[in-house]
Image (tube, rainbow, N blue to C red; front, side):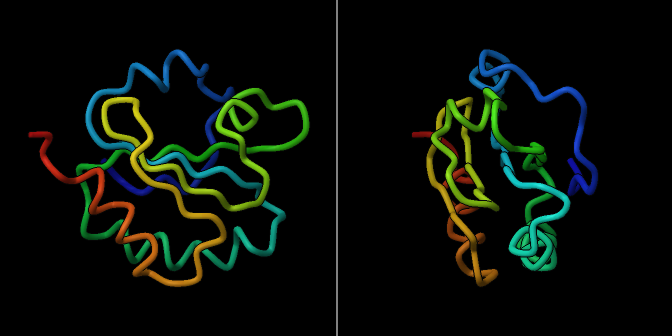
Amino acid sequence: MALQTSTPQPEPAREEVDALAGPALLEFGTSWCGHCRAAQPLIASAFAGHPQVRHIRIEDGSGRPLGRSFGVKLWPTLVFLRDGQERARAVRPRSVAAIEAGLAEIDRTPA
């Protein structure tokens, strides 16, 4: 997988997200959010060592059901999934280490 630099349209349904196999990162935010833009180099740096992780950018906002179903309140919010289940979360990450910690949680092979 590769780091996704654009936001797909339309957003996936919650059922699709819950059915994802393997590791995935949901990135909730907007293109105009300063916090989201500031986090992009951190996300790219952390993601470089995890090419097997699916990266899904979600344009979030009022009335967007996927973000509400995950309880997203601040941007960016990174939700780290393994087989459709949330394993970690980073809200407004300020370091590569914060993102790496979430990636480490989903990179682990299930016991």
